[in-house]
Length: 155
Length: 76
Image (tube, rainbow over all chains, first blue to last red; front, side, top):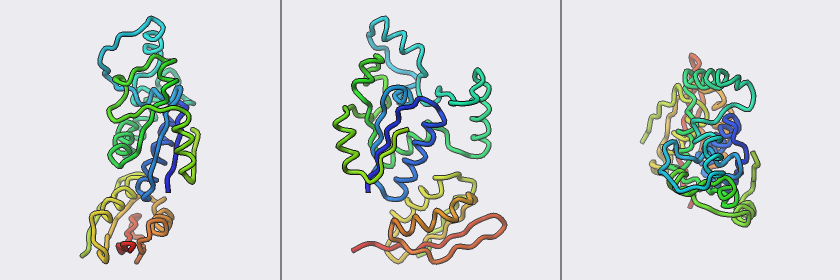
């Protein structure tokens, strides 16, 4: 059976949950489709994107938002970066895979990652700035995938 | 054939992914012996077998390590 996960949040902890569930589902033999909209799109940004011609507002969005999975921060206890750094340290020590690794694993194991075109347009993110293999779709694609799934999560 | 998988030290869902990959590359009737330190695996392995149709032969616990033996079943 298919699972569809919509990542709306750009919080590190929530993105973690989404990718743990995705990888778990893949290990259970499920198909997985993940949608990324609004703040969730930031999880898919390349850390070193190619330069893209942008309008001023798009550039500002680009600077203000976290550039990629490794730059996301905790929804609680971020504490100007200390809390997030501490959490990452503890997770590493306890051998929890990092978010970039979980994303790579999900892709390797066949998860389909789809970025919301409207959010990309609003935030001025271009396809070249997102990870390789990420597709682009709209709400109908999400709903179509949800129809084919027996569980759909909004995170 | 018995395939051994060392998933000690891996956190959820690492052991499940390792098991899934081992079973994928195995033949029907093969057994996979997986060793895991993540204690959620104790409950997870039941669900995993039920869902994927493979058979859990045994599940043992010793010195905080879980050892599970799974027989690979290929659906006709």
